[in-house]
Length: 290
Picture 1 (cartoon, rainbow, N blue to C red):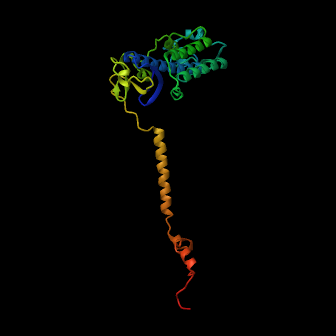
Picture 2: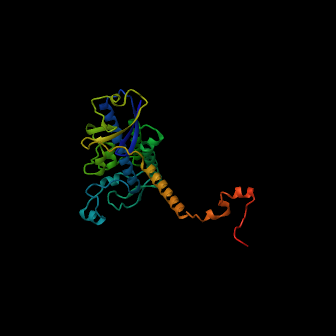
Picture 3: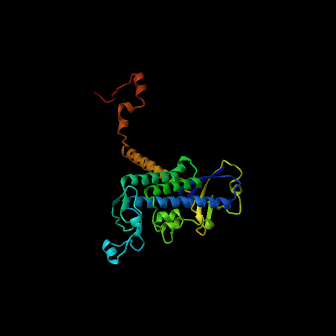
């Protein structure tokens, strides 16, 4: 199995294994699905953190309004009355005005936070350092865990406009958001390796050969963005270490130049003929008249 270290730009994403005989059309779609699914898990985790702190989403026509404005416009949060967390709620106002402030109690909040940590660990970029390959089944498992935690805390479900529910139902609208820019469409995805585009019409072995123990760094790009930047020869951490070493060496040389004192050469122990004169018995001879 060929091991692919998938990156976006210079940032590591995940490891994935594929046979060398795999069609690149299939592999590109597979890599893109895992990449986008990891982004989905990250978005759900971020929203669930807000859910644990400030409760469910307000209706779109009530978001950003003050209590006085809501009362003046006679707006009502019908879903807020239905969607009460298990064990009761604790009021914690959302300063941004996106959520209703009816947060779950500490026990239910802990359920959400623990599940968020576990889901993030599954898709973490640290899996690359650990040598663990991420599959679509693992990412789906992370989403199922998050869905289960939400069902435990909110048995009646979430409002249809809540971003967490929309993510679970694949109805999310990411247009005009930074998160939407990170998503790559399967039909527009490209894989690059060694400054070459891995064309979908070929097989993986056409580029990496038939050695199934090959490891490559494959970069995923959106079509039309051009070739990704080349990998640096040394990492930023190694570059910092080199700069630190040369700085220390330069300081040591400066100190040696400052301590370049030749007065010690006139000392008796620095005389290289002292031993010879000692054996000849001509030590401490004075030539001046007494």
